[in-house]
Image 1 (cartoon, each protein chain N blue to C red):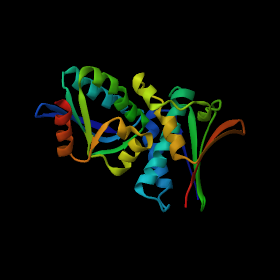
Image 2 (image 1 turned 135 degrees about the vertical axis):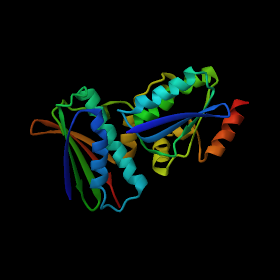
Image 3 (image 1 turned 45 degrees about the horizontal axis):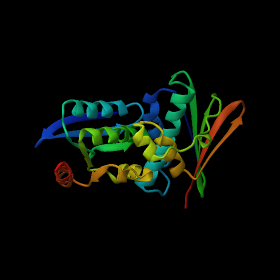
Image 4 (image 1 turned 180 degrees about the vertical axis):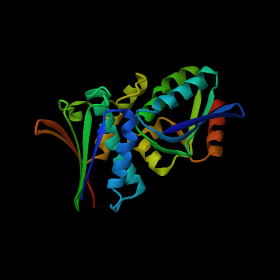
Length: 136
Length: 116
């Protein structure tokens, strides 16, 4: 199955992202906790892109796609920014975050913990962030 | 998206978080905690029984107060987390850095023990 959803880069649209992902995963044999973790990972990626790549400009669009296979679920977030590759960011230690009283930096840890793979590439002049979750 | 209520019980400030905390609403949680500390409370309970979702932005708010609370002698205990919410804390190992209890009664008990 394939599901698609386009949104403007406003943080107020994150609820719509979460609703879309929950809806897309409805037919999956997954627990509430598993679905919530995936919803969280996509929310984190979208909010990172909205804030850091698009400066929360609601006219900039993120194209979300969810494709479900028997053994994995593939999520794509397509936009026109330069590639925002979280693999290039080091994951800050919790101690550092506490000592520096930082409110950010946890999202990348979450995405990497929840998803089985995070890939980046260009397609038709756009940036694609692909997140893969294996299912059993 | 998120609704935050505060009430006081036995010298503790109870911050009840209702709904979802994400990057757009985490400021509400931040303001509520800051207000509680600003008013001089040293015992804070965070009621999460109606918290349906929390993203890293919300977790980051709790994290950012850990050092300040140590300096000021403020104790904070969270309670009533749904399994899906608690899982988010666990993925990051935050359950070890924050005080979390299943029920309000247990949270109050811990708060009193920590405040001695």
